[in-house]
Image (cartoon, rainbow over all chains, first blue to last red):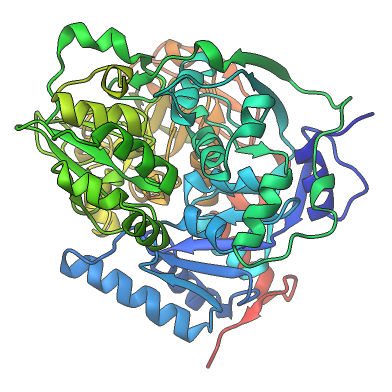
Length: 423
Length: 173
Ligand code: SF4
């Protein structure tokens, strides 16, 4: 009988011939990514308590991205501790203020199809765009991984989601995910979502990563996309040679899925999620009659400020101005993206329109750094989550949209369908 | 790990990690973090919950982030057990790793705030002493039983490492 991609990955990681959904396996971890937020500051004391070190200083990757740059003494202390940890345990791969972790794994050739990876952050699912398992775990569990190099897992069932057709102008991968959060709900725990179909095959890696990143918003264990030539090119661009069997990592044609869905991108409209959850979404035009005033438009996070996202923003802003009474803030997902966007004129378009550029890092996305919002304020954001209090005050309201939709709201001063500003 | 009895605190569906552990308090100690746990949905909870109390919730409890503080806050307050209709994956794993039994409990609607509830996670029984109703639930998965009865992942690892049963890296000098 055919096997799904996740079955093949977990069989290899657990050194078994084959595994079935529901089976409990112990997997060897190929890469363990830990972060300033829940990494060294939580894990180091536990290593001391156990009197042991990390299982492999090549496989434990450390990223400082959540509290960068330090905005207060506590953040500075957390970052210093993170750097001290890297020295003490002789960690070979450390990214200090280079950008947001999930984007860095992709940019730097860390991910290969078939790998089994764990990350100390729920959006670690983003790595699944490379056809590998990468899922999020809490710091307590990452402590165990960093010590033993192993983790238990229940082999998940797979939900297959296929997209065909072509996006209209002003529609992006983010709209797929806000639509899917509504359609599939946020309760797909212990299941994997595998995306496929012609629309996905046409997408760049940066766009595919939006789908796997926000598999977390579906509550899924992770998101997966079978590798193709576009994947291999991205691995090479990160400075790594793809493994020889890279393209073999895919679900068999006769694999069993627990659910199969097909959707059409031709008819997909820009989507907006209202407070306080991503599944609370509707077409952007449905919000127009309420003229929802926007105090802040935020372009940021792992999911929403990659180069493709910044290009979307610039395409809306070109020759226009951010509405007075609304502020636009843009925090590119990584230093590399910042450099590329500076070189190709994208940043200039944004600042000429009145946008402000913030450092690369998690920042306001999780209420940790610059750009948080006050009681009663409304923010529309290209990030992935709008839980109550996520971006600052418990009494603030966060709407989610694609980079097109966020930029359009910045220009209009209220929530609009971005297609009106592109034509 | 024996049976626990406590007062029920009842929450709804899709209570997320960010209201359990708000990001703006991330840099603070466990004590401070826990004192803000769930304040956006029930401002009384963190100040009045007692050791052994039982948290009852609806679907997708803990949905969202990987932040262990969401689970650690409940462990820190010495919550006796969690009974929810369903859990978000990372939160569920975190709870068990901190040694707090989290059981799937489809009948969560039959428990009201302040009911006196007894939970036996090993036997897989729940008793609502206020209403007099008893339930059987799936106990904690067998492969995790040892870890949870030892108080969570850290005591479990410590024992295995001290017994020489686990291969690990060495602490640098
Ligand atoms: S940018 Fe936001 S969603 Fe992404 S890793 Fe940082 S805090 Fe998490």
